[in-house]
Length: 591
Ligand code: AMP
Image (cartoon, rainbow, N blue to C red; front, top):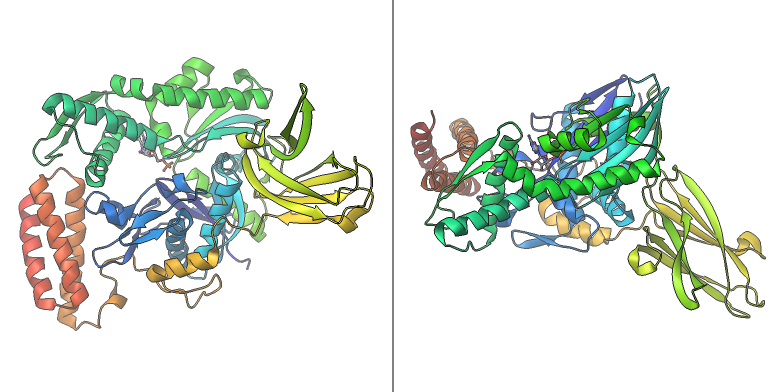
């Protein structure tokens, strides 16, 4: 039997897990659901919680909860979780670790390898950050594939006729569009474009700003944008946004938003569409650009495939229909299709027969630098070696020349991006080639770029006259933006020390406040108490998602917190008392 490699869609808002077994794609449930919020938190006892449990405390414990970490991937940033700071790679590793453990539970075997999807427009740093997160989670990331490509792969598995498709992928944090041609099992990406900071989260932010203005208009109160108020607003406006996908208007109500006044407003779909139109216009510009890159017009597109939760927004459909005369549709569940495509690619890598062959492209240009004498000016410019939309893997060379007589060394630089000048692009790396022949200026140096299937770059520089003997390779593949050893030490406080291969030593991630291993072996009665507490907590969390008054919500949160403390302390009489109180409150509030 081949080793199972899982496919993971590591999304801004949600993550999904899938595997190809016996020729069939299976979406694996995570905590009983096909979708897990990409949310990480610390519970009241300081234990790591991932997924819905963390999402549930987004408002109640904003300082202990992190959402949308994907937006920071590749940045030199830190986020605070309780008392400790973590890099985006470290936080993402908590999510991946949870997915790995869920996959192991579902499949009944260790899972060590994964194909992870990223937005097509993710740059080199963002891709490397994703690989690092996998590493930290104990997963070997055998391939990174682009999200729209994965979607096309999942759809293309059943396509025999030639079809040209546009994949429009609008998620929580990123937008991507790809032009894909499918023919006889080959999925070929012709062009990709996008924006790694444009998605449903931005729509939420516009609604939050709108609500803050409305609150000021109604109550003459400037809302202090503290983290708790902001989270409450984000949650309530996101919910309103979803309702507006199905209804022409929504009544938004959040009690005691500033401690004294309620937010109460009606929001119409028209208002909402006016707010988000400029952002959707940006996506249309990307669509035009990718069509132009593929040398196609909208008339050449047979199908528009919608991917990502935010494509449920009716204005997305309308704009694509009105402006491009394209008729978009959901071919497969837009939340799951990317993970399914990742699983297909994982299966192909693991040696599963059948299924599509993938020909992907790079959406970015890769350049080296050289001195140019343009327009009478001497300036360092980027010399493209692999232009954007080149199929992967790509292997291309350019020649540059030494500037001085007897020049003994050259510095080779690699950049990613479409700008002419280095400071318009993203720096990837550099290295020195030393010991060049002592010859007059104009000594040719061949710069060779290899871009692999993960979209990661290897650079080689060779002195032409002396051949390979003077070549040096810059392999960015294994290098990460963060120091993995340091990161391992940092996350060990929450997940315990372990290395990438420590399959047996991998400590169980406690996803549940009431996980047994945390607690001294309870006697039978105590077990009953714990079960009751667990059940009550779940019911309480369901209620917190609904419209309960601020006071009731506060009381529920406090009782849940106290019951967690009682469990941590092993104080069973106190737990029994909390169970009784919580049970009373829930009884009174539940329908
Ligand atoms: P994804 O990253 O694909 O999971 O998409 C998540 C984004 O989709 C979030 O911004 C959600 O708020 C948004 N979303 C989910 N359902 C809907 C809906 N019915 N209408 C509008 N946006 C939605």
